[in-house]
Amino acid sequence: MTTSTPPSWSAAGLDHALARSRAEQRAALGLYLPVGYPTRAAGLDALHLMAKHADVLQLGVPHTDPVLDGPVIRRAAAQALDAGFRMRDLFDAATELTAAGTTAVLAMSYWKPIEVYGPRAFAEELAAAGVSGVLVPDLPETETETGTGTGTAASTWQRAARAAGLHTSTLIPPRASDAHLAALGSVTSGLIHVPATPGLTGARRPLSPYLPHLVRRVRTLTGLPVAVGIGIGTPDQAAQASAYADSVIVGSAVIRRMHAQPGAAAVTAAEAARDFAEGVRRARPPAT
Image 1 (cartoon, rainbow, N blue to C red):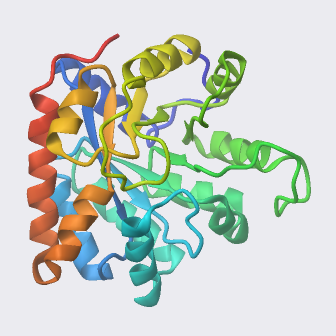
Image 2: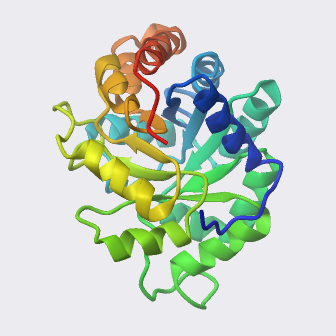
Image 3: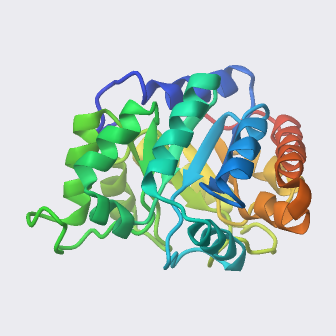
């Protein structure tokens, strides 16, 4: 496996979580929640309870233009921003979560908030908080102004992540060629993400019938563990994807339940986490 990230104590959290789930002959469960949703306090309570069932927590950075997200995550991000989310909330939540247990923590952010904050400072603060890696789903791969004034946004971020010892995860684009997947694999570490359904997050439709083949193809071409997300809406779908993926990521389905029970958001999130954990545990071992 080609990796762009040197070993570090924070990155090792994800590696250990994947190794542990593999030893238990199951896929790892990743759960996503925007930081600050539905409020700072309730969101942090929810994350602590979700950590009891998840192998990986993916902390989302709320953004005003989440171009890959459907209405569920858009609404949650807007609510977090309206409640006063600041980037410091991400670092504080990550610090508390990594200090509290063995669940690995990843961050998910669109490029613009990272660019505004400063890629180097963002990476360094995440590593100091114990975060294992970052997924930037819209990271530009072409020449662009990057805040540092040099190179591409992708190369700017990769330099910052390498220096901080963070994994850089990648979301593969639709209909990527073999050459493109191999190129993405050369600059990705930790996990490479594959959409379970086409389109935006939160879709309620069957998983793509081509997903098992796509996962095998991505794993073969990149040599990386494969996470399946975007469209895992039920525990049954989590079980289905767990049969061939190394990790399953769930976000909108948990947030949808929290939104339906605003007075008990944290408890509802924990119940959803438990249901999806049961789903991944009843699948056959992921392919190696």
